[in-house]
Image 1 (spheres, helix red, strand yellow):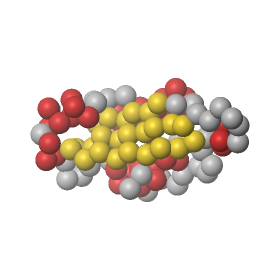
Image 2 (tube, one colour):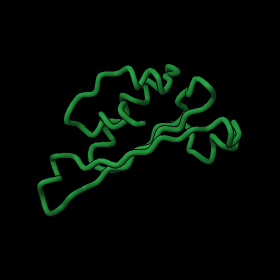
Image 3 (tube, helix red, strand yellow):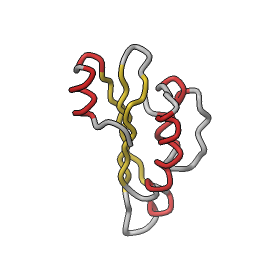
Image 4 (cartoon, helix red, strand yellow):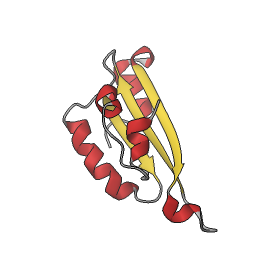
Length: 99
């Protein structure tokens, strides 16, 4: 959802872009022989780290990204995500606990 990392770097410049990444395996698949790891990325710009891209691939990302898309459209910043209480244990919590 939003800009990719290369798009953000082209639009805002390398020095204005900060990227946060995380990996997670949902408990739903963690105890099986068919583990499905998830990968997540936040693309932020400027000194206030406005989020311009939210990306995820893996189990449940289709449902997770819908809610985060609203936050992106409303101009959320990394600080907004940091101030959000994570729902544990979920893959979605990775988006609000990235450091």
